[in-house]
Image (tube, rainbow over all chains, first blue to last red; front, side, top):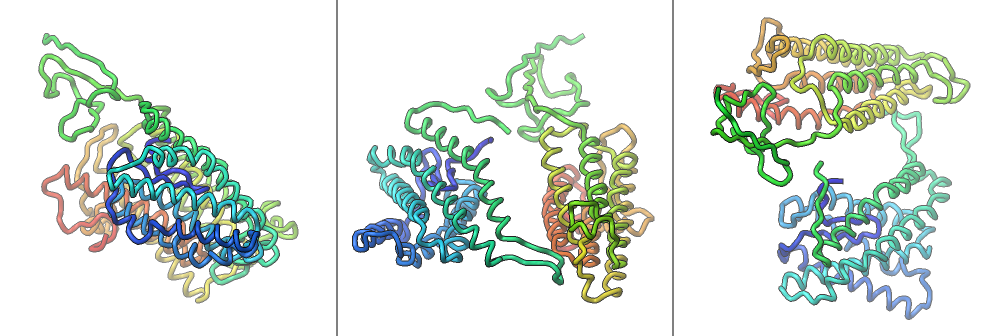
Length: 237
Length: 275
């Protein structure tokens, strides 16, 4: 696999944009760090009031879309170098989140009340709260061990849970996509091209199979290094 | 007879022996006595991993598209509906496209066998899978649409096709001229590097403006092919190819600048005056 930095875990999005030690500047954190907390509170409140997850997505969707699109900033951070994570890895992560939010849940209304949506929303929310707490406390130079422990252990459950939520959601969307032919281009047309969103989604789902283990094991290696001080020799490409 | 003590150490754990550029490997032709070392030389070795010859990779990656495109052109069963099996397109441009595409890859195969002089003998084995996926994949994708029963010919008809064909042919001749000029720079069996200059062949005059006119002409050929077929996948293939060739051209340009003090300053890597 070579030298992947810590910015692993697409799926559930436990995107640990990591590095061993050098603290980020305040820029990645400023107006956006409490956003996931806001989202979490909104979700909990909704559930407490309504007792069901139906309509949950609808109530938080604006916030979710706004915050998740904001994540594009993270790619810029990598590009201009204030975060040492690779642009490609961050790009892949953010793209997969944006894909889920805009191309699946936003566009395919019938699946918005699926349980699987709540599944990945919860996974993303907890992950991001943990991650940003980790950054904030690291910056303030006062990192409680619990936060570090959480950041490097929660993903073990959250990542598969998030991936499961995402895959189940895409799977639930398939019949609707096939029926409506949405986002697809058919022949004949002037530019002699075609695109079938249905098959695209199938391929996307299949791509989780090679990607998920790579990222998951990368996170596990990072965990062993940070929490247990193991020296891990990365295979040179 | 001078006596040398040579230590052979693992590259991973120490710094490499280096001069000229930090981290640069020694050349095959280097002679130990000529190197700037004392009586003790430390040589670092690195396992490059499984290798495959450049010629093998080129032949495989080019033979694929040639063959695959023809499968679609002849509408071999199981690609389009059964009623189209082995039928022929009624559009002239489709036949023209097949000739151009096939010519292009036959030219590449012949150049690999008889024209190119490679600096390196081998490349990492995994490259053949990566490269073949790229070439074969795109060839299949393009060929599928161009030879499709529902193919739509270019909007501006014969005019567009003629213009595009002219661009394609000129660029193919240009590309070939550059390959011949580069070959003549380097005697057979040697690995010398010299600054390429324009020759009597007008196609090589592009050397006045770019370091890698072979890439310039190659992009031009594919743009011609894209206009001729008016097929978006071809345009995308051209774009991806252009991106990769720009990266290579910039690298080559940088090497030239580093190696030759008197390198012509007007030259850009791949696009005159721009890139």
